[in-house]
Length: 409
Image (cartoon, rainbow, N blue to C red; front, side, top):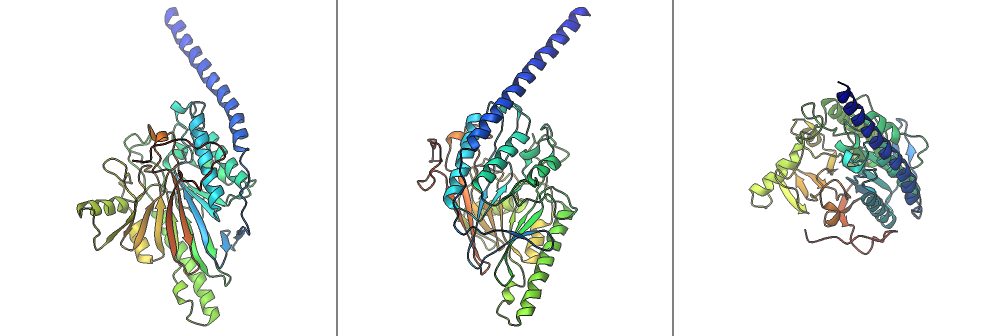
């Protein structure tokens, strides 16, 4: 009995020493990372657009010109002492692309954090705080949707706590809202772009695709959650409300010149692709990688292994609702780091974002063809164009040396 107790206390003491050592090391690393992040200067944006709050507490920008959105996705800052080099590279890349592109708004579609034991920490606050600090130093307006890795069940902070981190009132440039209505998820919110008449020319809708199902809480079976029924109802109510807003302005103008604005055009930003993305890609493959009546290939490739698109397997009515309302003309997502394909399916553009990840996928640090950003230029006539930009081109000159990678994949 005494021998067993000695062994037990020995193991307990050993674990306590290890945990204490990691905690101290991570605290020291936090100081070093903050100093690294503080070396990045504010982006010089001439005539930067300044958002305002509308009567419903939603942010909006006003411009009669183009509005540039940059989508970043799957940054995967781990935040631990075993991921320092990769975390710095991710921060360096993000800063370089934002500095060069000078977007009006950055939308990060999930997985900012990747706090996992093999990174040396399960404190996901490190990653989120590093990213917040970087974006505020850069001085560009930004918001986020959440991914499955932003709040794992073993992480110290759950999704509600993470949302509060981004709602910090001290953040000058963050336009995040945790919940525009009492619905499922922690990042459903809207940012609008208006012209000088007050008409909404583009609505940017952010929604939470949530994390894993109860069947797979740790995510080890890749059984992902979806957009819930009350979120879809929120989306429909939001679009209806925005349509009513535009119609009131059109009626006050008294001509039919702006009738095309009666249905507000919108872009949807999520993390996990909908099942329809997999359906569309399978239709493309089954047609011999040729266009069909419902589907048009635009650009990009799929680098993930079968089933290629790691979407939710839960049925929902989100895509059908989008088709019925006729507002959303494109949706943007990440999640599958090696996919950057863009398809048009049943009249809606389905666009993967270029990922940042240096740590989550084994060996991805050395791969470069998938790393970059997505630019969405929104025009005042409600049209838009999507441009994928690879990080490894001369126009992106990072503050710290850019790593050599394999671009042939």
